[in-house]
Length: 124
Image 1: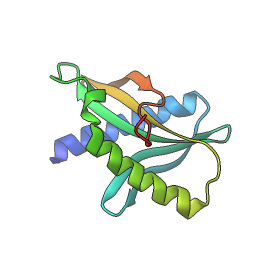
Image 2: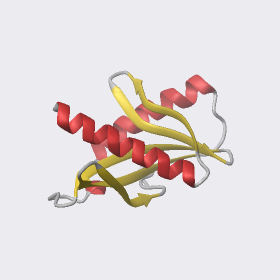
Image 3: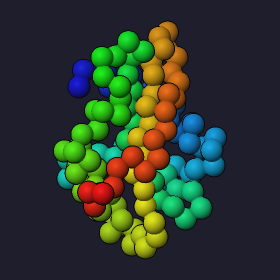
Image 4: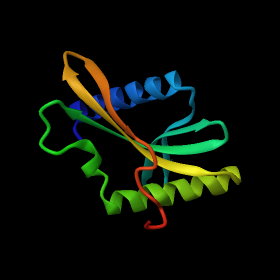
């Protein structure tokens, strides 16, 4: 990823984290890495552990952000999430969400969509 794309992605992740905190989530991890895989945000609310993939796009992007989280990306997220759950001995419910952030220009970002339970790690 280019430096500009990295900066835009980081800004989108910050916007997503602020949004989630405003809804009562607690950010446990940002950019959690495991075996060359990364989870953008790991948050918790009321005993629910949520793994969040943040997709930041320009307002004129060709493909809506949620479509960029294909089956391969989902498998990578699940692999990293499994490692996190094992490391923390997490025994309660988990969920995978996607947050779509739009770069509206001039350093401004907004959350377009928060897709809760965006995919099922068990293929359902």
